[in-house]
Amino acid sequence: MSLKHGLLGLLNYGDMTGYELDKAFKVSLNFFWQAQTSQIYRELNAMEKQAWLISQIIPQTGKPNRKLYKITDLGRAELKKWLSKKDLEEDLNVKNVFLMKMFFSAEVNVSETIDTLKRYKAQCLGDLQAMSQTGSVISDYGQNLENKKSMVYWASTATFGVYYLNMCVKWAEDTIKTLEEIS
Amino acid sequence: MSLKHGLLGLLNYGDMTGYELDKAFKVSLNFFWQAQTSQIYRELNAMEKQAWLISQIIPQTGKPNRKLYKITDLGRAELKKWLSKKDLEEDLNVKNVFLMKMFFSAEVNVSETIDTLKRYKAQCLGDLQAMSQTGSVISDYGQNLENKKSMVYWASTATFGVYYLNMCVKWAEDTIKTLEEIS
DNA sequence: AGTATATATTATACTTGTAGAATATAAAGG
DNA sequence: CCTTTATATTCTACAAGTATAATATATACT
Image (cartoon, rainbow over all chains, first blue to last red; front, side):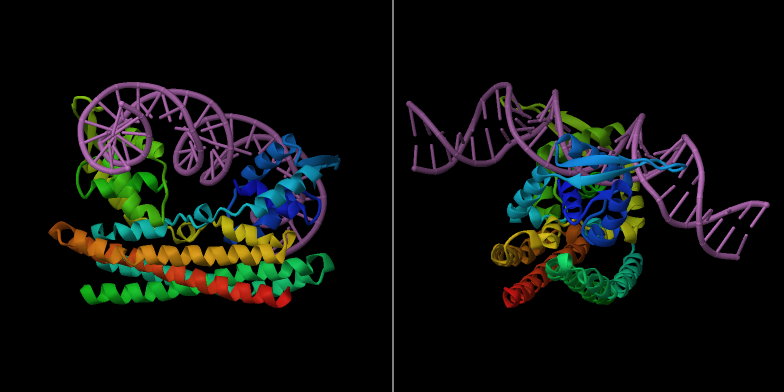
């Protein structure tokens, strides 16, 4: 159950509405966690019931009213508890559809798999390109004194992304070579 | 929805009971997909309703009867359809609790985070150790003529695992260094 | 003799994730 | 002028994942 905690973490930086959280989530945590908009709203409701958050309705005319969420002391305590309890066995679990398909690829033509691997590699390179701009985004946010301490952690997750994608590219190249040899 | 397809893939190698599938799953696909035993049994039921499988009850005395599953032509067609439809955008999605915690780690002591990273690195090295034996397991299975073609794909996913874990170790070392500099 | 382990499946309750529709308006772009 | 985009949240339905207990027996270990 990390989505709730991701949202707690973001709200710990400042009050936000569901709409703002959804966008903040998608530009920060999205690389290592994905969530549907509807899921975010549902979790926010649940979190308010658990008293991790309180909300305040800000009326608007024309548009739906905004619901501004604020983290409570209980929510902050929960965030810290979660951060301190790192279950490494669980945290190393990864679900990777692409690898599962590779595992069974003897069932399809080698040429098809080689083609897929080439597209996979291209996708990784594209993502790397996109991530190369993350550095500047992070240092922009980091201008804010409050965020300065966080910057190094944000950067480390971005670095993970770069390492990961480079690794995937190398793996794809090696695997393509192996498959070309046997075909 | 990859669990069903993982089970289809395994049953494509030969008929198995839920119990056997559970064990086969855990020694082959478990690195990139995790599933509860109860989930496997439930999915098997659903798959039989969809006519991807048929089952045959083998009576036993003393123990619960065995339910031997066999993949149908429909199931085989579904497997191939799934294998051919590689949605790269979706397949690159990854959920990583550990990184999410890193992202928010400004909230906890640097020393605590450094400690966690050290344990993370140790865990990765341990997993690497365990994976180094996978090669021989694969070539054992590969003695079987039917499996010979699959061997190269199995090996490629194992290689991914090795690359991944090595990358994680390097990242952990780099991040530890960075954190030690600022603390 | 007693305990743990392996065998084999079912059941239940709950939590998360996925997908998409419905609603209503303002502002920006071609 | 018309279409798209952005704003902001709610709701429904379903699929998949998590967690644990119940059942019943044989065999292996200590």
